[in-house]
Image 1 (cartoon, rainbow, N blue to C red):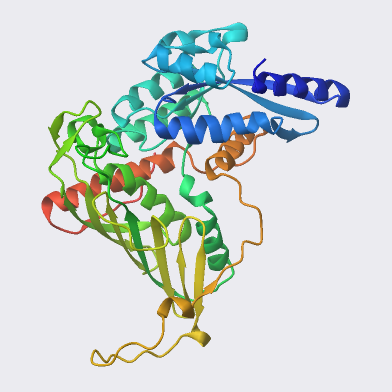
Image 2: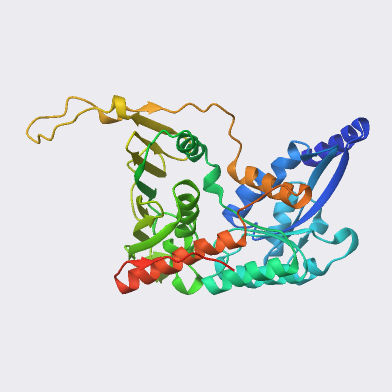
Length: 407
């Protein structure tokens, strides 16, 4: 007997002994054969929730997620189901049939982790079927489509959420703690560095799928990363009011999953300057053609009148005004001090769960316990807008205003 099935039986027995009600929620998961959908959303979120006995909603009710795996390749879905002891009846290559199922086979929530170009139409189908929607970003290929999804969902009365995982990283949670505590004084600027070297695919296998580098398939680092930068900046520092971007395709030729060469038509690097509501300026470099010389794959340096911080995925270091050294520019004399050693590490002060799992828990509580949840399809549309305007800025070679998004 599979270990997960044994665990499920043990959970059932515990519920019977403690008079806890287990509510099963069937979740259609489209795109879980991809790296992000599989690792973060299926294994480290929903299956992790099952391993811990479900999600406690309070009042004696525990939510039990039942994934329904949806995709184009039946053999890949079946392999995932076998690997994790999931019911073989809960796989399908027919999204329409999954959304139309009734009774015990009906799904309650639709989740999308497909390629961007396929996402918009699939979400429309789920909304039309009356399903709650939780989705990766970007939610659509353009702002008009993203806003339409938000309008359709509101009109249908379904609840909806967009993954904004970086807000739940330990490093950014520590940064948020500093902001809320007034550590920085007046925030002056934000400097972000993100990226790593993605191998071309000829002599070493690429770490990312080839469609990421084809604009015609919805690829490009602006489309991929600017939605992230929008919610990070919006939530922590203020709404983005303007954007100026320079994009580049530094590696014009790559090799796909079958070892065949192809022309990279999408940007693999973007250098952006963002003005923020309140006066701060953010500069974020994003690149899949950079070798890492920093502590983590993404880092944000925040400078304020009273102090500065550098936050990554997990760590966060600070330097307060009172302990700021007084360097003097003298290129003729070797530095006798290490700048990095002059910063202090911010303590954890709490246990940090997987960020994707934490946001899944919040969304499920929003749907089934009416808990508040603000990262909806309108928030997702803001990210699509920033990517769209970032690309326009690069194409036109100018600074572009970012108007407020509303329905």
